[in-house]
Each structure stands twice: as C-alpha cells, then as structure tokens.
Length: 370
Ligand SMILES: [Mg+2]
View 1 (cartoon, rainbow, N blue to C red):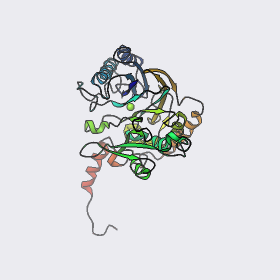
View 2 (view 1 turned 135 degrees about the vertical axis):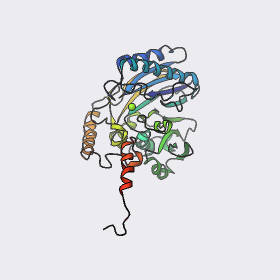
View 3 (view 1 turned 135 degrees about the horizontal axis):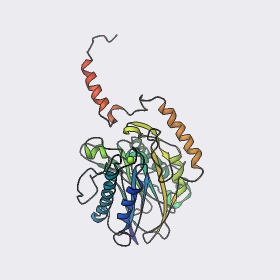
View 4 (view 1 turned 90 degrees about the vertical axis):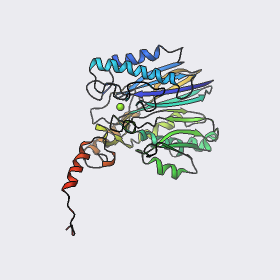
C-alpha cells in the first residue's frame, strides 16, 4: 500500500513567552485534524516541542496536496484564534499570510512529507526541533546515514552497503532554492563540505542506493527569514526518517544526537548552543531557550499508526542531557562574544546592525594605524 506521511509544524502561540502552547490551543488544533481521521486522513497525531506544534498525518493523497495542507492551515488558524483569545505570546507567529493559497509553501509552517510503499513492518521516526535552524539535523543525519563509526549497519548489512544518496538544498542562494544530489560514500567529502554550513545547506531528503525508489528521510527546508524578508521566528525543522531493515536502525539514529552539536537559535534566534534531545511535549527552557529536539517512534500498517514511543525519554538520555547542558553553560559564560552570539551576517535582530552602521560613520581612515 502506498501511503503519504506528512508532518506540518508551526508556532502559533505560547504561554508566558516562548514556552509551550496552552492546553486549549493544543485541543483546538487536535480537534480540527482528528475530525478528518477516517475521512481525509488515515491517522493523525498532534504533539509539541517547545512552542512548536507538529501535526503528523498519514493519508493517500500525493505530496503537497492542497486538501492536506489546507487542513493543517485551518487547524493552525483554529489554534491561533484560541491564542489570540487567551493573549498568548506570538499568536499566529508562523502563519505569515492571511489566507491559504493552495500549498503551505511560503506561508510559514515547516513541512516534511514522504510518500512510501509501505513495508510489512514499516518503522518511522519523527524528529521535531525548536529554537534552532533548518540545518540542525545535518550532522546527526550525516553520521547515521554515511559514517560507519555511528552507523555500523553500513558495514554489517548488505542492504546498507551501497550507501545513500543525499539531496541537499542551498537555502540562501539569491536566485532561489537550489538542489544538489551527492552519493555517499564516493562523494563523502563533498557532502561534508556542504553540510558543515548549517545556515546555508540543508539535507532535504535521503534515498537508498540499493533500492533507488526507497526514500529514507524527508526534512523540512523552509527558512522563515527568507519567506518574510525579515526576522519572524526561528526556523525549527521537522523530519520523517524511515528506520530498520534497508535503512539505519532506530538505535543508530540516537548516538549522533548525543553529541549535542552546536546549532544556531536560542534566545532571539541569535546565538549558538548545543542541540538537546528531550522527551516529547517538553516546554522550551528558560535557560536561554536551549535548542531542543524530540524523536518519536511509530509503527505503521495500512497507514494506521501505532505509538509513539518517546525515543529520548529512556534513562540513558539523562546523563547525556547533563553533559550537553554543561556544554551550554560553558558557552553562556562568554555572553555576547562570538561564537556564543552569531556573527553579524546571521543576526536576526536589527538593533546591533543599526548600531554598527552608526559607528561606521565615526571611523576615519588613517595612513598609519599605530
Ligand atoms: Mg519554535
């Protein structure tokens, strides 16, 4: 059976600052999508990571389907109405346009979609991040799909031996989004050279090379700043990752997240802190809006989901979290000095840019700077 899995995510308001959606807001979103279970949708789940609500939907519609995207839009609109009524912070923040226009693209919410021919034991992982940037999944996915130090399946399984094909998007090119396709392991250094720049190059999807029709992963690539032409929020990605058998195992996806790699985001979207794996429905941290990621595991049969299993909730993640938080605290000790604060080219807030422009007028050229 062919099934489409769609994850659409938006921040439409949170309680007392950038924290988490209210119960009432969440209920309004859930009520709208669940009314379509057994109709437009086969199955659905609604959850949050920090202030971002993710709507997971399985259905038989194609990728980018208008009815599916409209449903998510309406659900987020319903949530926005509640947020406005309750005076929540950032009500409707990620809905950048007033009206829906056929597809979520350019409207603000993050979208990851994948159409698959269901395996008898289809296993999925849904990743959702908050307080970070579109490339936050670059390193974990690179390690899980291309590095045998993290993914022994690349050595142990004939199905993985041929490696994977990475579709990487350039989200900052002036002529619009560009895509490059590179195959691991042959082009490993080229892949690494791009993915290290998490602001600009983002994994859009990953494909099996042994089974070229089999897509392993889909990642949202929208950059809100590009859409709006100004700072409107953080570009927190979502991803769908198929696991087991011809793909890396669920437990091979975990350790790359234990690194707690530094990513941009945090307070005012203007700093670097390590990405912290947290249980689902965790509020954003008052410790400087620490970047965070949740992972949910599902089984699927005929599009019907079983689960989730909360993949960062088991006890092993407690000491890992302590380690990553210590790393964050060290970085915070140097306050606004780079690289704790982002370089000027990446700063989302205009204040410091305006300040530097004014200071520029006070500089004078001297023949001998000494
Ligand atoms: Mg957010």
